[in-house]
Length: 315
Image (cartoon, rainbow, N blue to C red; front, side):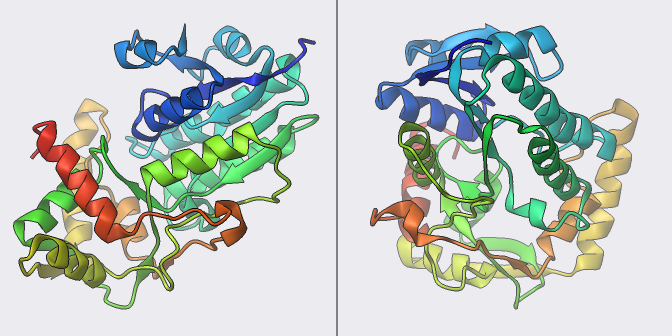
């Protein structure tokens, strides 16, 4: 069994939206980062990240990734898939294989799983079930590992293509949203989560999971709140266009049927619609995690993200 190095972090999902922010914050703290990647990545290479070719289905690559790591930071996973089985394979079984490798090659390491708020409601959608199953697999296989589960709410920020359509609409003065005026949800700016994770990795912690961080907004948000706050920032009224569940389900079914012959993940599926209409996606925030640090409000995060989109030519 290899001795673990507290300065070495084994990272999955480094080429994704959150993963790039995590890699940057960890390197800024002077930590070594070894990342599992499918292909070369000049951006990560420029940060001084050690790149290791492989994926969550490659046992030898997983063992090489985690050998000697003081922290295994698992951020990889699917948010869109062509079937429930694909979600299960990537999110649940991928976590199980990584935990097994860490138990063999980095016993005693911290294992930080970046899960999702959806995991607490596994019956809502195949994605939610797969994230819940990932947490179960980690708990079952932890052994000498020190597991910690983080369940972020909806993330947004520079580099995110998933929320680009929403923020682009807000910038243009309208927002198409579910007709669910009482529903509430939490948000978190990506830089805040990356800083929190880097702090948890760099310093000893004794928090019991799962941890559900958010931006500290009391009561969370409604879709109308986003429209109002974006309007305050841009100086123009944002019109809210609310669609009933039946319309969104029909659109999702069409998208699923269109994607099925190609074996691709549809841009919208019925599971995602069910998530959108779930009444309460507010995080059970624990203020101790932030140690008095200021968190980014949506008004400020929206402005910073919009500026980045425009600078990079995404808008």
